[in-house]
Image 1: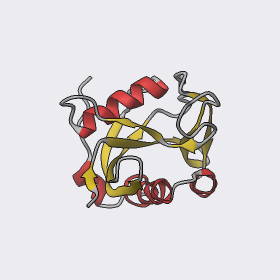
Image 2 (image 1 turned 45 degrees about the horizontal axis):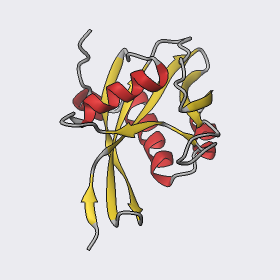
Image 3 (image 1 turned 90 degrees about the horizontal axis):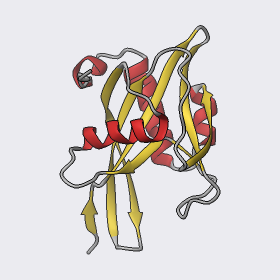
Image 4 (image 1 turned 30 degrees about the horizontal axis):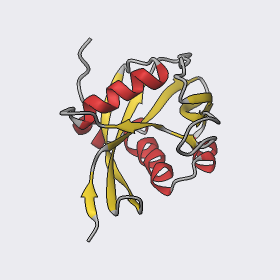
Length: 157
């Protein structure tokens, strides 16, 4: 029977522009062991006794240099099966708003980035869970649905 694991987090980063919201996608470096050249959201592993939201904020800082203006739990969980360790993975998803004009400082893990509109972003993402996460963020967080009031996590500055 597969193990159920929840050790990965994803962060959908967005900013507002005069033309509407834009979402950040990162391209994994060609030299990366896992998924080289893949377009993705900010993602990474929970370390030690970190809580999922703490890991998400750390990964956001490490991969982009961003400290968000606002930060939310997204009402979505990405799931996937990993045959290498027979585990069903449940990935916590978060949303991070950064200022208009913000540009990431990429870590070595990524070689380039794009700011894209929702439809362009969902076409570039490979994993269905990340596509769905972007759509949920667009509707419930960026779109200002009532859910955004209940899922925002205060940021310590």
